[in-house]
Length: 185
Image 1 (cartoon, rainbow, N blue to C red):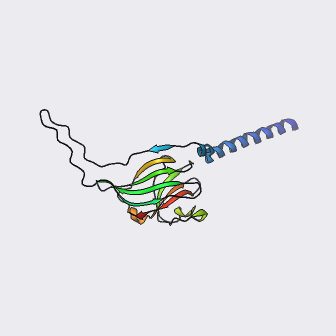
Image 2: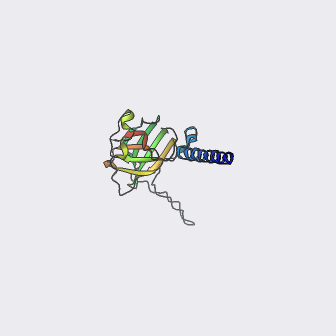
Image 3: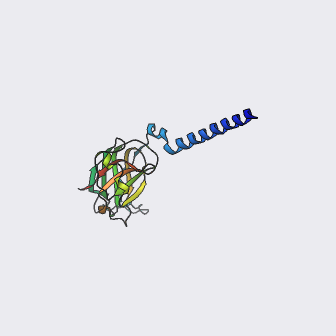
């Protein structure tokens, strides 16, 4: 009888250990550190679409946009929890909308990475790792890829100038992978 009880205990310990290991792997996603996701989006444009000519009518070219995309603020990423490089820009499009553009991004991949506008100051080193969720922030979207060029439309009801920094934020572990201070262009 003691032998059966001991065997059941060991089985329960092994099953529980396996469950904890699987849960830990799913939570930490360590394989993400070795998997790169590259995104190469072009800068969005808000140009007029050319109209198709009517039959027998001469072709009418599209009217030029009143103003092309204009960079109104920008900054360079500094590294926090993970080595992060690239440039971030706030770009005003011809239709008056704004887009956050990240160019040449190179950072580690990770679980639940987000792009945040924040009112927190960008600080070097470990002092800057966790400051971005201390104040006000706008979660723009999940990071599309850990490498390349990507765009994040800024909501029309958000005054982006009230948020002088951008963070690649790991929401799972509440830490900044890298951040950039935005300066008016």
